[in-house]
Length: 429
Image (cartoon, rainbow, N blue to C red; front, side, top):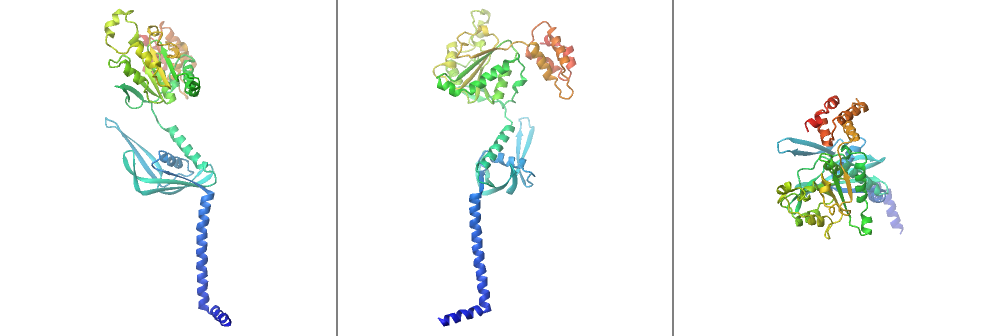
């Protein structure tokens, strides 16, 4: 034992051994420290940070990147660009650019908290919109314990993007037994741009909105979840325009059916009315043209001979027969409500009837004020508006909204000419 003690003492007195042992101990210590830091980092990242990963196969991927780029305190300096090209048949080309944070690491602040953004591009590719594109991921990380923090940010980015998205009103028409889009989406028309007599627009829109929010009420009481509207009155009084405004306001499409189409029969009409696309309004325009009494108008009999194969009973069954679909909104328009069979417009088939008449003083004034409204110059003063209303009333005849609009369009930059030449409304109509 003494010899062993002497041997160890001699090693400790050896400067070479002491230096080596010190280096070894330092290496072990650094190794332990490194492993400890890795473990500590993993524990902290797992328990003290929240993260959200999204790939470019998800529709919200560009929305999130766009949101980050818009709302960072200082916009990211490393960007990527997506170019959108739209070329018309005539050769005119329009382009638009979207700038997004580029590959790598970025920082931004959301609700006062710093968020780390890591955008990575992988070697593999995915199929997207008919093209092969590199697979990408974006990972968001921030300090905290509430995982819904990043979820709320994603929802905010989605809501903001969709609120700025330019959408149009889609028109469908019947081709054979199916609905097909008719041309490109139309520009949405604001509901308040259609001037009607006081209260009409609000009455119909509020009724329709209440219907859309009452699905459970109808189901609980066993009432068919359908709603029918009849708009009647002279031509050019805003019936079709109002339906376009309603559809635009609700974000609905419009499915148009012409009952005078020669190839349309009862079976095809029944199929079409009950297979309309979701979130759509079915529109039957000028329904009287197919069903008014020929006996009362013998001179028209030849003109309507063979014009349609749809029968009145076929239309009634298509509207509320046994096989009718639920959750349907039906609008009919007519210029001659007295020609319609009472069975067609009874409650259950038509729930709301509204008269669209020629222009009242209120409507004339509203249209004039809307055309010449100028927030800076205030051209459409009350005095000018009343002068125009009086000028129209001196015509001693009823005028439609279409006639007033046509006249104002001819004088869209000169309200005084619109007033002085009011007689042109009926002279050239």
